[in-house]
Length: 108
Image (cartoon, rainbow, N blue to C red):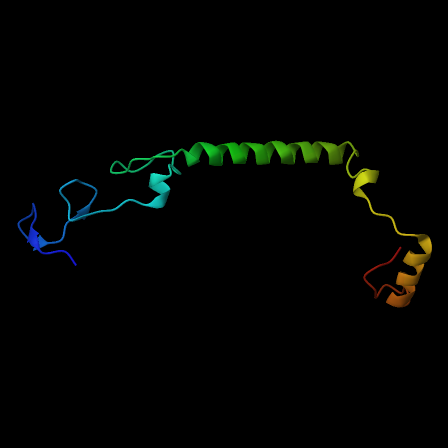
């Protein structure tokens, strides 16, 4: 793979790290894209996904709090989010389920 060469500790082999005079330089996609707010010393980020991940987390929390508040206020679900079926269709469905003796999944 790489020709052996002496390295700083006197042994020969391939030097794998993130320095310019290395045989190989390694970086991880997450480091390159800036996914961590505490990247390793050897890495450089060309993106700022950590800030975007934080923004997504913050938006998720905001949305869930709004949802919870609307459920508590009984403003969700509203008529626009509910689907009604004609009463005759509901009765036909229940009849196909069998007797309402507590053994069915749907009871009124």
